[in-house]
Length: 473
Image 1: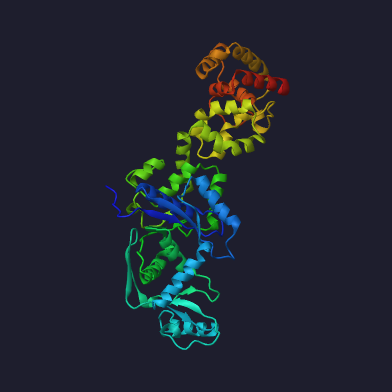
Image 2: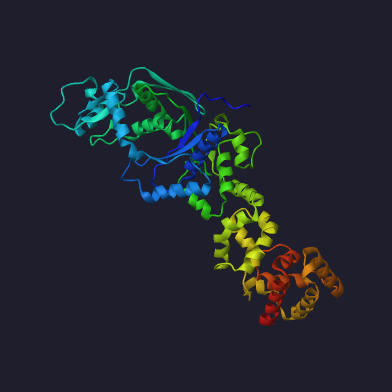
């Protein structure tokens, strides 16, 4: 299907409020904006909606920027801070007053409460007695309210379809507070217009705001952007996503061992589908991403699916990527910084074991056998195979392994020597396998023994066996 042709350059935006971390729901919204803009050769802009001074913090702003940076979401142009546009917001409100689309409202708090009670009892929206003018009280504080026109308002949403509201159900909302500060509903419209936003893609909890904002756009004589309201993400239990469902910030998923590419893939696929595409990279999704492929029904968070997709991206990642994103996890598992020899063994081992893990935490666990420092402490169940009658076999096996030269120290050749020894002694593999694994890994998860021996390297492997014999026999 060929992409829709847009008459002007596509410009999307992600506009988080800096009151906490980058929520995965917000991250998915950002991804939809990002891929749609890239699909059409447009721009993906970032705006920090920091007008709520009580809740907005510099720390939260930085957390969002760090989350986007980790996730690989690169925005175009400078970051727009909504709080710095207050003069533009006030100018727009004043222009609406001059054109008759807004008015000065002098209602007191008691009068507002009374009107709200009356409007509720009459089943109508809030209307101020000042919407039709009147003699202003001397030196009385006032707000600027939008004068909702008669009629109906319709938007054609890319996901929700055609949505219509009766304007009589919209309150005469405040545009400027008594202290001159703008409200969110006005600031968003002015900023989107000022930034040249052509497509507003956001959560469907903002759907009704689109109706209100369209009225403001029209009153100001501005083009109305295309709207796309995306269903929210639900938890695995089908209920609205909340803290009870576990870690919800992008930073938390980084700490849980997910790769940015894996999380991008999973979140994009969570509520968007295109044919049988399941595992894809940025280039693949950019080629085909269209808003029409966003599902109308809410998506459910599925941690098993998230881990599976992440595991597929781990397998596709190069070793340098795994080492980079896994550094913290490898060191945490090892209990300290890795030395050059450990990193070399790890580098050689990762291609052989990465398919056994779905997160970097799991990979660090699977790779622990190559990074363990000598001498290895063997305790608990791992120590059980180290019985007195196994000492002679381990010493014989050590001699067999020492006969293998460095240039032939490879999985298959090592396996051939092990099998030859077993055949000669006429014993089952378990007689040497369990004690040898204990000496080599200390009970850490590991692949087949011949591969373990290869990945450890000749000197390290022989050294571990000698340590074991000297310590436990």
